[in-house]
Every structure is written in structure tokens, then in C-alpha cells.
Length: 114
Image 1 (cartoon, rainbow, N blue to C red):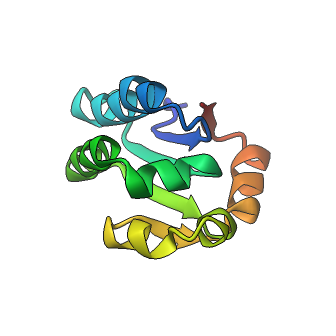
Image 2: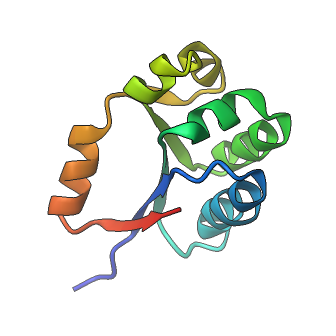
């Protein structure tokens, strides 16, 4: 059996330092160093507002995207926080994530929650 090559990071902690020094750093290096074949960061809750408004996080997000990290945001959260358009302009996919998160969990996918 081969090692799983797909990682999901559920990003809910809106602390900018944690976001930059863990989420963005690990997601980016996971692909650069080939620790994982595919990395998807799920933006959920307050992180939607952080990603939409913090220029440092936006820069880190674009760097991560440039190496292949995928970003999805919870539509319910981003709509309620009024940031869906700003996230879409950054290339973040906006969709309802409850079903997707349930599938990830039921399929025993690799998931880090931050």
C-alpha cells in the first residue's frame, strides 16, 4: 500500500503569526519538499476575514498558490463576513464546506486542524 499523498489543512485559527508560521509555511513546504503530493487549505470562520484583509497573509497565500497549494473557503462563513468577493479575487474557491469536511473525515483522509 502506498503512503497517502493528499493533505487537508482546516484553518480556523485567525492569529496572523500562527497563520504565517504554521499554516502557510507548512502548506508551501509540503509541496516544495514533496512531503505531500497535494495540499488543500480549507479557510473556515475568522480566517476568511484574515485572508481577505491582511496583506501579509495574502502574500503568503499567493506564494503557496504559486507552488500548487489549493485554497477553499467556507461560503457560509465568507458570505456572513462579507469577504467572498475578496477571497475569490485571490483565487480561493468559495463553496459550502460542511459536506466536504464530512467526506474528508468519513474517508479517513489526512487532516490537520489549526
